[in-house]
Amino acid sequence: MGIFSAILGNAGAVSKENLLKDYGKLLTPDEDIELGFKLLRDTFVFTTKRLILVDHQGLTGSKVEYLSISYKSISRFSVETSGTFELDAELKIWISSEANPSIRKKFNKSVNVYDVQNVLAHHVL
Image (cartoon, rainbow, N blue to C red):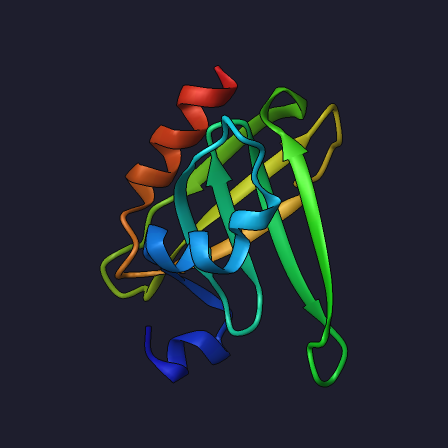
């Protein structure tokens, strides 16, 4: 993922090996990582049981929040693909019955948003 793309807030895919090394301690014994994406300092991970959002806070990023969202609490989601002249695609996730999306993430061209949609559809529907 390029620095320009990261500055714009676009996510890029992260290997399962790196995700396991960094976040394996968060997983339950029967939970596996399926996909993960990294923003400039933040990461979000799709596991077999939940979505984990990793938010590095503060100027140094030493304070970290790990937000776990059960797939059953996701009421709907949308994936907007990039157009001909656009650089990114966008994922929106609604939790419970909220009117506005609770989560919005942008992906750069290196991410296949159909993979993201497939993981969500598999767990949510």
